[in-house]
Length: 228
Length: 362
Image 1 (cartoon, rainbow over the protein chains, first blue to last red):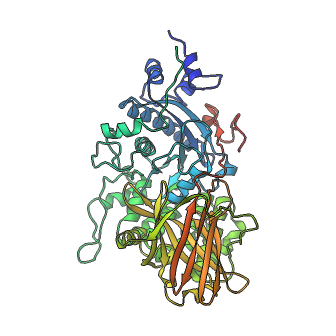
Image 2 (image 1 turned 45 degrees about the vertical axis):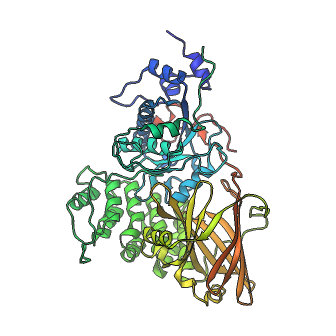
Image 3 (image 1 turned 90 degrees about the vertical axis):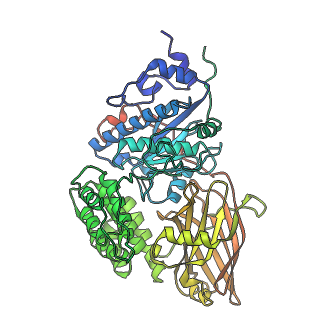
């Protein structure tokens, strides 16, 4: 069996390290789902990787059962996003988890407009090469989340994905996160095909070749060099 | 730029004769709002109902808001959805709801009251303020500020920027923002998307500007009450909600309110203070207009705060006509905060379990 060490080192994951928590970036494997160590090693070895930071805001205000459910929802988001982007050979490799301390969260747990979402992305950022994904409690209006096509500078404006966690449908949250990640990676428009990930509603999560070409050339797409 | 909630159920739209009709599906939505059925989710159903034209939908939302047994997140969502359902009825319902002690729900009540509240709402907010804390208090204070400016009332002033509080940007630095008078199609779309009397004001599509920067675009829509020839004289003696800033979703072309432009007479005659706030109350820009000979010269700059980026704008205001001579923006955020790492498994521990490790905030 090949050693995991070089993979974890390559991803820059600090020790002590656990397979599910650190290598897969999951709290637990979502119920009814399976993960493959071999497949994830292949993913990390692949030529195109994307690292993601899952940043929680306002979770401290949730009662214990609801908070646990929100964590399971995040695990599903990570798992599904990985599956969705596998179809274009873009490996969602390192997923790390973060929290905005309550003293700094202000009113950002409940996003009231796109302007507030932009301000959230402007104010907080993980200083690494991953996409910042903010999980907020609510996002007012008909939207579940937002993201703008991002530049390469995390100290620039609007470099993040913002998605609501409490809209009541975990699979839709996962679709929304992957959809907004598509916008972040440069896909600016919406698809009219309900099977396409970039359709502006529940959809079949497919990514077409034109969208893939845009996403795969984004400057956040990287590789894990140095693996034996 | 966004994915929308489940739209598998149709919602009512006004019929040709103008009378709203109850289309198939709305009954299911209302049942879902009550929690009587599981599809769509209650959160999605509240949103669908608020967007519908069912005449008494504010009553369904009121029921959720007043239900002590309902989760806070749903009561919060019901509160913030009320202004879209029926602004007049919403104000009455929200004033009564200022007695709610659940902080998150109260935050939603205050946020919504700021959009639709009148004198009674301001009185209710004043009564509630002493016992209101945290985010709810911040929203309550901003609601009072909005109402006072909308109605031109004394008190509840936006603080004047302290010396050094604005970000200086040299005239030859930063990228020029593309600003022009909004084409009629843009202005009409924006007015339509922002809805009837957003923040309690009537927008004038003929007095609007659109802007575009690197990764965002939008419009500044002015309050029709301050587009006439006597506007400058009025602004010199009363507070005003002068305009709304809207951001455009480039993937759909739709607009949503992002900021409010507030003005108030300064203590020294001949000056008008300008304060621009995000919809959550965060003050992002501030400036001043100097008035002489019936014309004003104004300037705006970004307020120093975490997440701020430099912005500078200036122009003139005369005979109700706003001119923007310069608008420029920096591209770098002044200072960002690093989130704290979450220890694996910590989130599954009981509430209050400390987050271990972590990078000190920047």
